[in-house]
Structures are given as structure tokens and as C-alpha cells.
Image 1: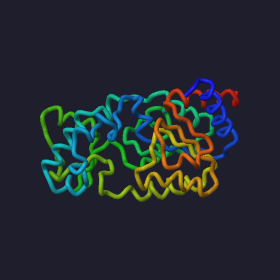
Image 2: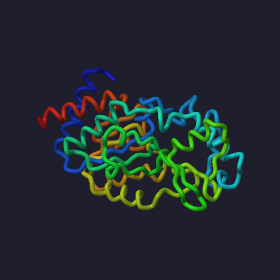
Image 3: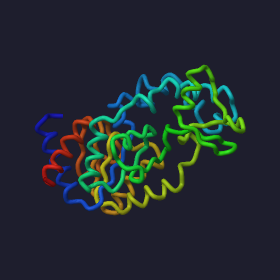
Image 4: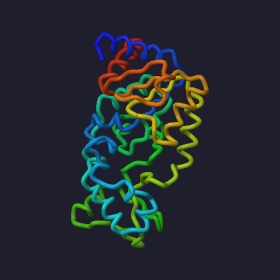
Length: 260
């Protein structure tokens, strides 16, 4: 995308934000790849090395070998302790400081929005997060750092220290329902915003991808910032094919200039 064109598009998005009363930001894997977290579905990503069928909820619960594979994958990754927010995350947090952010709805499980400074109660995590593991028998919760230490010490599939039940990362696996309260709140916020900004999502994973549909149906303006196409491109008021960090930094700089 030409520099001049990107500048015009980001200026237009900044103008939409300035005029809006309720701005909802929706984020997918594309925002976190700039923090070094691999997109699971891209070439060379996690699903090139692991079979997604081994990572369904039903398989995880029924097969010890599947649990070992799952914990091995998580032990190798930097989803929790190594990854840091990038300029896109900080730009969204700055929108909140400027009083322009209603909430963030995210498909990501990395908690980078909170690390960047968005308050917990403004981040709706549709797929859970990697900060905790939960026992499926007694419900006891463990910080992921504690489980990571056990993995590093050689445990292949840590169990609950209290009841020895199955431990599962507090994320939504394939075949598992989304947390109903979070989904309901995200749906409500989508229907009631006047500007919905998609960042780094191809909008193909349901039911998360319904959120911009709800917003558009209710009359909200739609902005899409993503390197590849999405099913909602034709409905976007502004469509930007560029990296999230550079784009959001430009946009928020313009919004802040208006507020000064």
C-alpha cells in the first residue's frame, strides 16, 4: 500500500473515531503475530506441526496422549511469559486513555491487551486466556507459570495437586462452547456500538466472526485492518491492508492530536 494512500485511510479512521461515541475494537491473531506469537493457521504455524484433531475438547479429556501433546505444544510456545505487547496493543490502550474505547473483543488468548494497559473489565476474551490452568474435577485454578515450571521439570501432562484430576488450560478448545457470559456481553457491545474496528482477523472463526455482522446490522460504521481479505470487506467503511502496529499508531496519533 502506498504511503500516501495509507495516510489518507488512517486519517479517515481517526475522523471516525473522533466522531464516534462507542468504539469497539475486535482483534484476532494478526495483531499478535507482530509480538512474535505465531498464527496457528499460517504456513509454518502450529497446525503444520500438530494435527488439530488432537486438540479437540473430547480428545483432550479422553486420551492421555493427546494431553501430553497439548502440554508439549504449550510448553514450547511463548504465549504467556515471553510475548510483549506491540505498538498496535499500546495504540488501543491509548484509545482507552483518550476516552474513546468502549471495549476490546478478542479471539486471542495471550492477555497482551491487558499487558498494554487496557483494563481487565474492558477486555472480552472469547476464547479464554493462557494465564491459568483449571482442574476439570475440582475446579482449582493454577497460574500458568506454575504449570510451566512443572513442564520444564519434566512432567508431560501435569494433573491437579489436590485431587489429581485433569488440568486443562483455561482456553476454549475445538468442540468446546465459548464462555456464555462473555459471548453475551460481546454480542451486546457489538449491537450497541457506532464504530466497530477489526484488527488482524480473517473473520472466519465462528461464532466470534458474527460480532462485526451484528455491529453492521445495527448501523455501526465498520473498519477492517488486516493483511488478507475477509468476508466483511465489502461492508467496510474503511478497509486497510497494512500491518496493525504501524496503522494503529498512525490512527491514534491523529486522534490524540485532536484531543490536545
